[in-house]
Image 1 (cartoon, rainbow, N blue to C red):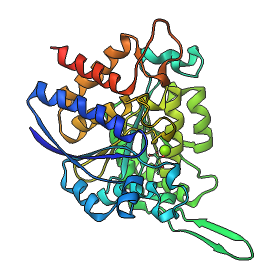
Image 2 (image 1 turned 90 degrees about the horizontal axis):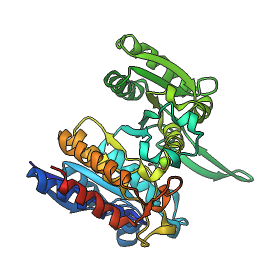
Image 3 (image 1 turned 120 degrees about the vertical axis):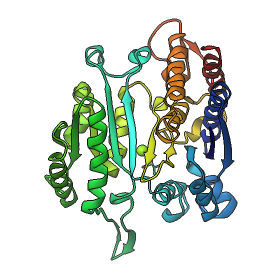
Image 4 (image 1 turned 90 degrees about the vertical axis):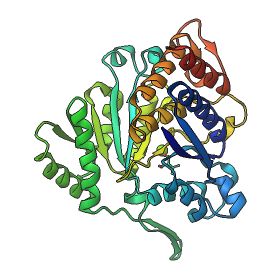
Length: 361
Ligand code: IPM
Ligand code: MG
């Protein structure tokens, strides 16, 4: 199969980790007889430097024309003082909205090889951590009006708004995801305070009638933050709005060992998806060849699975990541715990995964 992939390397460690994912994709292409054609698109700080805009239309068009988009990370202190609507992160929000990818899927699964890297007590980890956060991605407070004005002092406002149809379409993804897994969906909101959350809850319960095979529960977001560290085994699928999902998914990643391991897929009404690791651009370690490329490599695997319908190829990548970890290779972020571990850099980790895929029959 031939597929066109738009590649956004971005800022900080973005270019390094994307290189490793492309290394792995190229090995997959050779092994399975596919052709992947890559088109670079600029977004984030590098696009601000080049065009004065974190996502010029020309770059978004490249992404819309592709079969899928692979993204590293954007942002960094260099652009901290640019106005809010021109920040690198705005590029990220705009590409998500521009592609219409309203559903962000972030798995929190513990790799047995990394169990000792989890900050949780062993008896909690032993019960298993394997859940998915389905995060609404193009609505809510991140996309409401933002303004700052003077009224004797500075006042800022960010508007949080959700329509029933926006909630319903992400709710369906939550129910469908749970149906394919262990059949448990936890809807997370703050309905004791927020109107948007009360609407959220009512839509989820209306949908539940269409999915009798899924067991729906409700949880307040503050309680959820606590339950994720207290008893993560209780969760199968969590569905939640944009900001809550942003925060909870970082927390969920940490209990699995490292945020550097977690991939994500963002999909909308078409198969053109956006695939990115959930971590940021880590400017403090950029260019040092120490970043963990596995979150990006696994994002590429998700692209093969969800956008290109190549499940065997995706399984191959995931399996080979596991094999490399089983052999004791670790980037710095996942070094903790365990004996006889071998510390490797970003590029070496990509080489090891690629070699494993090549060698495996
Ligand atoms: C993420 C990031 C982004 C988000 C930022 C950089 C805009 O934190 O993907 O989780 O909030 O969505
Ligand atoms: Mg985040």
